Amino acid sequence: MKKKAFFGLGNPGPQYRNTRHNAGFMSIDGYIDKYNNVVKSENKKNYTLDQIIGDDYRLLLVKPMTFMNLSGKAVREVCEKKGLEVEDIVVIYDDVSLPTGKIRLRDRGSAGGQKGMRSIIDSMGTALIKRIKIGIGPKDSRDLRNFVLSGFTKDEREPFEWTLNEVLEAMAYLADNDFKAAMNRFNGSSWEADSD
Image (cartoon, rainbow, N blue to C red; front, side, top):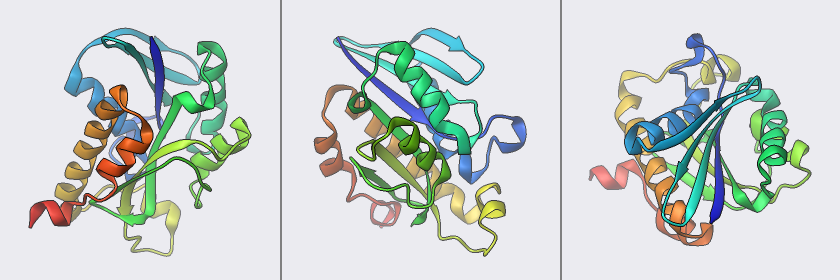
């Protein structure tokens, strides 16, 4: 049985729940709500983990509870405890360089200034980590910290909801397909094109 893990990045606590920086958490929660077939849940100090079993795969849906900047600690812990290799994991996180209404799948690369992803690359010792980046830009403030920890504006909600749904579809697609195929399928889509 194939084993894959999705790590959605964010910050724990109600004050962060609907902020841009919690797009990764929202993806994990959204997937669980949409498919509603969790067979096992774990709440640990450094992470929460929900497990879904399909016909020939096992999905681990993980939210690090270490706060964003220490995400790598939780990712490494889960990988060691669950016997996951780096090729088994996909990290989902917000990206200010992408406009709201776009997602981008990459199978490697730098953290691009995203501190959670930087922590994971450092902890895992490689940049060859698959990721789904969720657009939360354009950044309209010089204060990046306040921007990512703020909520979406009224005008951003519709494109963000579209983006989140695309992420859920990409996650479901990846349960049965390889990452290259998912990149080809999802990287060209955008809310603007879909709403024309």
